[in-house]
Structures are given as structure tokens and as C-alpha cells.
Length: 270
View 1: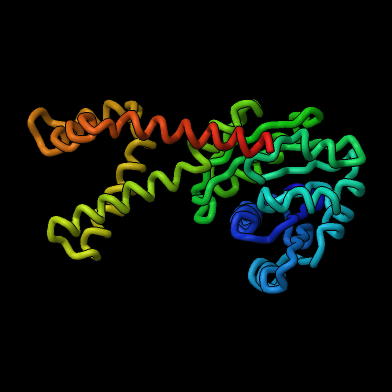
View 2: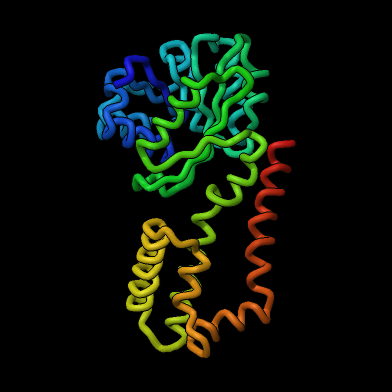
């Protein structure tokens, strides 16, 4: 168990997912955690359901915590940094999960030489199946990065990358669940169009997606090999893929993910 004090600036869904994982893994004691949020309902929820302390402002967190997780939306980061930047200490680790916010922006907003780590999580963290990427800022050391990795792995998996790769990470795993949900939506839609009830189509599509995800994780074979085994010559799967290929669907998916990476770079540049 880490004996340092941990603080959350922002107590939304992602902060909740991280805090749940942290408590379950016993990384920090509940008494060592402080969560700040402007919404009284969220503060009360953290206190009542997770058993951690709560505060209405970020100042309390930055003053009391050794490790601070900035769990606010990117559009609110400027306001938060103006509030906590002058109070940040050189002995603190700041971990930001705000998409598209470079570590340099946080470093520049702090009066002290603060160690900053940037994390890109995704929403499956809400059920303990998150995928996060972690990178360190200019002053972040190995311990700071490992602290962030431990926090993320309490609710999923984590990899360490260079900051220059974070826009691609955002496009692949940050936005990735939405692509997956979209595919499940379309499978359900097709099932209904072919005569299934919505309930039956949903069960078929969701369980198939779950099984396929678990199989690709468990198998030592690459995804393309697993796909090949399902795609019998002249069969139904081949027919579906031929249509996608004829209409450019394969290329569209790659281009769409790359467009998400471009948009991430645009947001980071302001």
C-alpha cells in the first residue's frame, strides 16, 4: 500500500472508476484519498459509496495530496490550472487524464517544477477492463510513471509510450470503444432487418462481440489469422467481406482512425 496521500480533482465517472480500482487493489487507504468536485451530489457519492473524503474545491486537493489526479474535461483544464498552478509543489506528482492536453501545458501553468504524467484511459475502465497509455513529462521520473501505471492497472491494463504517440493512442484505444459499439449497433440493426427481434439480435451481437474479444486476447495468433479461420471460401463471411471490400469499407476504417489521430493533434495544438 502506498503511504502517500492521493487526491482527485474532478469526481466524475473516470475518477470513480479509478478510485474503485485503487481501493479494490488496496493501493491507497480510503482515509488517504481526497476527491474534489463542484457537484455536491458527486462529493456525497464518493463519501457514502467509496468511503473517501471529499472537498468542494481543487485547492484542498493540491494542498493536501502528494499524488494528484487531474480528472477533468479538457475544456475545464485551463480554469483548474489557474486555480492550482500557483500552489503546486515540486515534491508532487500530477497525473492528468484530460485528452489532448500536453504535459508542457500543465508544467508551464505550475509555479514549481512539478512532475507531470499524462494518461489516456478509456471507458471500459468503468468495469475494470480499461486500456490506458502512460507517458511522462519533462521532469517525471520512473517512480512517477510507475505510480500512474499502478493506478491504471488497478482498473485494467496500461502501457508506457512516448508523448508524441499519445494522439495515435487516443485514436486507437481512447476512441476505440466507440468504434466497437458502432459495429455492435450495426450487427443488431442487420439482425432486425433480417427478421430477428431486437432483443434476440442484441443478445447475439453482444455475446459474439464478447467472445471474439476474449478469443483475440487469449490466442497467440494475430487477428488476421483468426479472421481467416472464420472466412471459409464461398461462405457467408466471405460474402460479407467482399461487399465491404467492394465499397471501400476496409480502407474507410483505417482512414477514420487516422482522422481521429489528426483531430487529437488539432485539439492539442489549441
